[in-house]
Length: 244
Image (cartoon, rainbow, N blue to C red; front, side):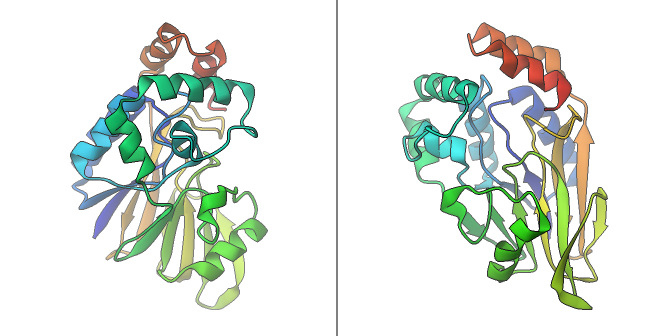
């Protein structure tokens, strides 16, 4: 089966549309999202509508939870808090109901999906090191798990010949044939933070045992204008150009 996996969208409609156009050419069977559909960007309802229309399998991110008052924003930075306040006012009752019903984890036939970690998804912790990844690896019951949250794409691996050791690769095309387990951070559709402003997503082919982390240029000017026009903080538009 062929899956498209979307990282943090964050209300960036232009980036999402660019990714969905590319996905059409990939002829995928299912679309997955690691959450944070909303937050930061100025088109949260439009992004929700796209995912619902496509029947995507979506998990709850911390910004999604905050937008429906299921997570305290005390630890959000100032700009994130401002964006959540704006987002709450921009979402319809139907949008909020949909976000509020999202699960923390999705287990599909060939893979699992969570936002931050698999072992404690409701805490929205980050996986930033191989040590951070170990508890999620230990919790995995399927060979592949997709996460996001850090907005930085990377693939962490436990190989058949040394299943107790966790390694990683920055490669964009990864052969999973030798992997006992793979934990893949797919980066971000709407707000990359690896100093590459291009939108990102992943294609996972379970039959071929491969995952590819893809990047595409999109019209950042259009989305930055949308953010400014909405009255959101200027920094949220500026950072799109920098990939930070």
